[in-house]
Image (cartoon, rainbow, N blue to C red):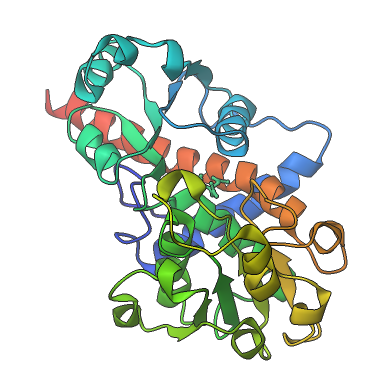
Length: 318
Ligand code: NCD
């Protein structure tokens, strides 16, 4: 099993075999998570620090649990109460933490590129837990694992990503990952929520849900990212739900065995019908959460192996 990356900053730098390596190991961790003894030792003796500069429920909990299940010392910084509020810069905070010798740093930040910048300043493995509108690699990986387990493969599927594409790092990472694995991607949403230059990504774009969903195997819904909008993107939530909200009637246009996904947090009755989200015959939203822990265990395990190997080489050279 080889994974030759010092950090996990995005899906962009990964090759298809890197993606498969992470998913294969995550599959094993998913089995471990379902057993009564959930612990492994891959991160024993290592220190993991979580720095979330933006709100998060499932991603932060998932990284925390993943680290603990593999035996790391895990610390989640309360960034709202941190010195950042006193004017300390991101880099100063990172350097302070770096002096405590963490091995894994998990970072979420509202600015695209902030996590890459930080990775250049510290000497541990950095995992991007979402930076602005840029990337959210572990989300795309957990989505990929959920799809692979539900559909039995991760190639030549027809996948619709729907809603607020423009503001979504989840959409961006998924488009890159699913494209690398040779799937057909359709983006569906109002033109105001489509990013400029999206055609370059080799996707098909629709502004009509029923047409866009025709025959697809996977329907991935996205949250309306109000906090990243400065007004004027949609007429009203009611109108949006009417045109772009996923309900049973619109889903009937997809393949009969199409699965429904959502990264959470969900706005029920805005982008998705609550009953459909809870319908376990179609919705894999709970599996996505479960696979999230497994994928983060796998990603941190692989990065830690690289970290140990590089440190050993340094020690031998010294
Ligand atoms: C996503 C995020 O933060 O980018 N949530 C998540 O990580 N599960 C999507 C969102 O906030 O809508």
